[in-house]
Length: 214
Image 1 (spheres, rainbow, N blue to C red):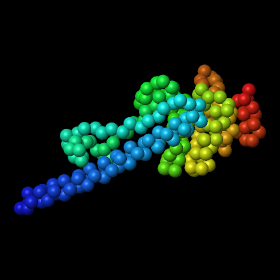
Image 2 (image 1 turned 90 degrees about the vertical axis):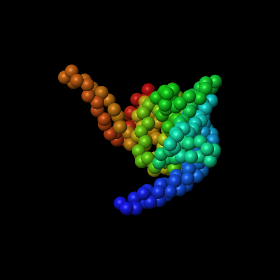
Image 3 (image 1 turned 30 degrees about the vertical axis):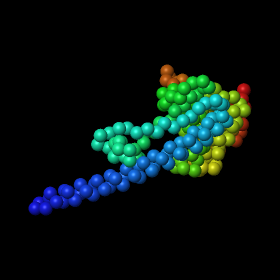
Image 4 (image 1 turned 180 degrees about the vertical axis):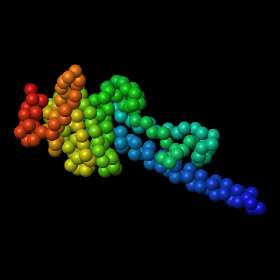
């Protein structure tokens, strides 16, 4: 108690020193992110070309959030920060040629979002540690040839990157790449609708793929 004020001054000095170090590391991390974002955008756009989204533009917006109590940066400004650094990162997409870039979360359709996530997963295949990936209706708006490309890319996520990949699809070109095939159906009994999921054996799978082709 008798030395509390001196101890507070000492701790405040330590805090100030740590915040200075943090600011240096945060700005360095931000520079690396901005460099990596250019390469990421180019790689994702190449993947989107394969996924029947030729002409789509992808970009990474990295900006700071001003905060009077935030980290003091080299240019004299102060920025909000958290455990990930000072950057606020948002993915931007222009799905069609001639459109401006807008936040991915606001404009992409379900099928486009699935394909964008597939493009990102393929691009970040070595860095991604998420064990299970689920793609729902990724086949929206694509045909047989592109479906085969998408199927191979999905297979690659499982075979090359050791992910468990679950795909809900109506396209046989995708379903044919699965190691296991489950048939989902609905039935009405006693005024109630129930959903059935059946694991298909080799014969059942051939029949189902034939039915999907039909």
